[in-house]
Amino acid sequence: MKNEWYYTNQTVDRHEARRLELIIEQETGLILNNPFYDGAAKEVSTLDTTGKTQLSEDEIVGMDLRKIRDSVGIVAMMTADQCIGSAMEIAIAAFSWGKPVYVIARKDLFRHHPWIKYFASRIFDDVHAFIEYAKENLQ
Image 1 (tube, rainbow, N blue to C red):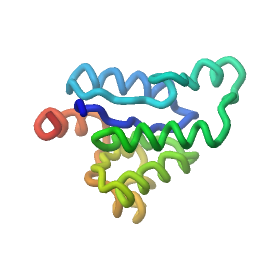
Image 2 (cartoon, rainbow, N blue to C red):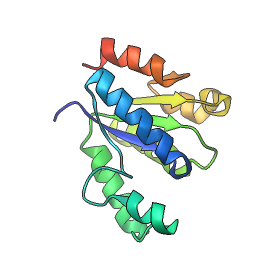
Image 3 (cartoon, helix red, strand yellow):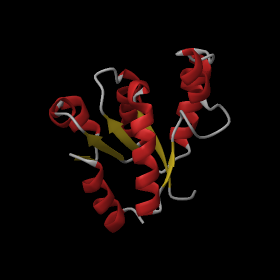
């Protein structure tokens, strides 16, 4: 397995998350697997044109779980209050598979939430703090 990480982010902030993903990859050499943009089912093309996905719940969750299972761990960009999918992915990765979870929490709500604190291996206030950590520790 390469240094490939599952990159969870919220649908409403997917464009900003993508921009930051590319910066993280360029500066750290990590491979971030973004479910909206990477892989066989690129959800973003349908989301951007219709506002909805054409994938079923089984397809979305099944694909995401396989990607998480096959990754080193999770890098989570937590930006929006609508984050139930990301929260579920964090819990499953950490609890069920013992994978490391690094959370970039751009809101106090996520930095101090007991469930995020419990499952996260480490929480960062911003992308730059994560990048510096990754350069030193995730290579």
